Amino acid sequence: MKSKIKSGLKIYLFIIIFLLVVCFCYSLYLSNTSKDISLIAKIGIGGSTFLVLGLAYGNAIHKKGLLIGLLVALIHVLLFKAIIYLSIGSFDFNFLLLAIYTILGGIGGLLGVNIKKIF
Image (cartoon, rainbow, N blue to C red):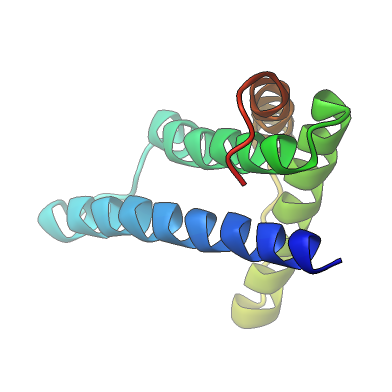
């Protein structure tokens, strides 16, 4: 049981560091330009994040990578949307982004199962 908790903490620590780097680059872009980010950039930033998230979970569990990646991505997208709704009060839901993020999470889960165990 302790190894599962340690593995989960390692995953979230890795993802938090990755997200901090991505958010720093995004905020640097927004501070230097006065326009909002395009849909392509949202797909690139969010897609890479969900790919790494699926990869980390698939690598930690090392079974059923596609299913784990899809479920983890779907749960995290819905969690992010719920947190944004509770903090801002607006609910903007884009099914195209949901599908892309979920598929990339599944691909990350497949890749995570097939590489040597890191977490």
